[in-house]
Image (cartoon, rainbow, N blue to C red; front, side, top):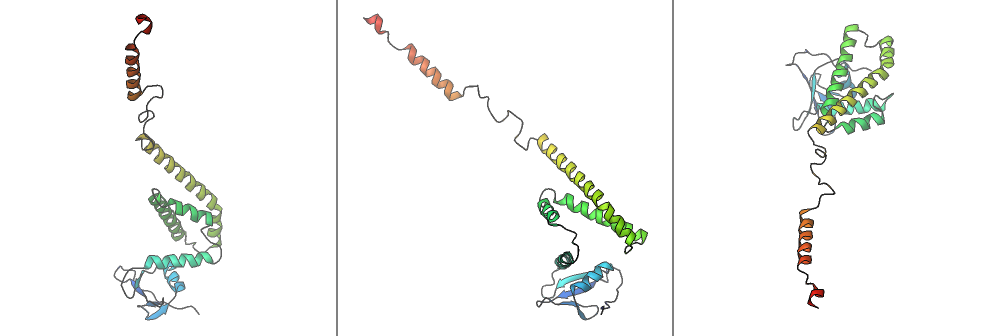
Length: 201
């Protein structure tokens, strides 16, 4: 049986508040009933504004709940993220984190806009089209990432952040050090003061 959650106004002032209690149960304050992750997933699909808060502290935990929904969705059926893709995403945390986040955000939003304009969110034709375009999109992303990486590396090399300019921090191997020069001078002076034993005889 499908639970009817009811719709609210899309106004920012009418955001559905869902409270999470210590027993991990979720309570919808709009319908005055308990809900599940499946129900929250339906709210997302229906673009219903909502916020999940900790019932005790009032902390916004919406993002944590959304991650749980993604984890459950990935465990059922065909996952979106392969192990290799997840490893690559983990590697992006750092200097390129913002680049990947912006790229994924814009790409997903573009797909949603196309779906909205064509009205083919559930059509088989749209699904087939997106599956055929997946290799092209992956190749475009790979090229974009490689170009961003090359630009970043070239910029760092330009400012000498990877070892500086060649020869600036090391001395020529054939050039004698100051200490070696002093030792050679002292040796020459000792040789000049050596007495001529043949002359005394």
